[in-house]
Image 1 (cartoon, rainbow, N blue to C red):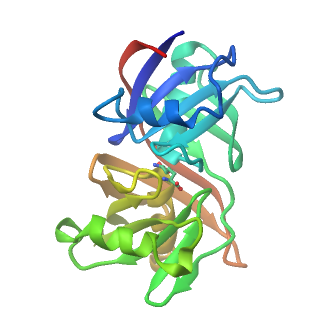
Image 2 (cartoon, helix red, strand yellow):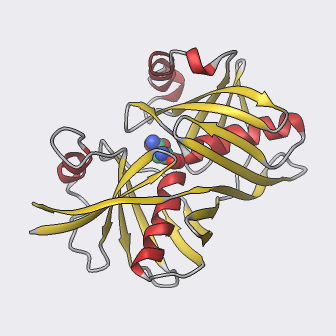
Length: 257
Ligand SMILES: N[C@@H](CCC[C@H](N)C(=O)O)C(=O)O
């Protein structure tokens, strides 16, 4: 069988995208997911996304990490919105379903504003923080993130007993200004640092924004710039969270499976 695929990137977080509205892709074929994401034996990406039809929504985003596991992906969702616009499924606005529930989004000239799910609050973990923004995120503030051993420290927290059995993504943050942070992320399911993580920078922005009493927060990720707007509730929860940034089609091709 021949599969037409597209490659997208959102601030350097890259995805193989497949229009699977005809449901030809076997959702249980994790070996195929891993092979397509493999940077040496496949197309190569941090994750794979299928766009499927879903009653009551413009589309459903089915997301897999490069190792075949599933979670919510913020940058992937921004790319899925751009891909759906390219396919003509949506025009300027989208209402779609992801693993963590319904999302809304707007797209204008390649810039995607993604509505994230409500966040219940921020947990303190020793001197660090934990926030679930649809996927789990440990957040540590460090002096100089540019020089920080992200993969070594990230893997050690990701595999620590406190996060067993599912593990967590790990973000390292250095404040650059009252409303700006630099973030590097170790991603579970990729088991490496990625150039950007949408749910991760959202989690970091909620922590830093709450400390500073500011929204929006601007984020410098290794693969580009993002911003996060949000509303804080009296009970410590957050809503009206928007993750804003570019999403771009890089190339398309076919693979025979
Ligand atoms: N890159 C993503 C996060 C993908 C999911 C994550 N690796 C997990 O397993 O929780 C993003 O942009 O949010």
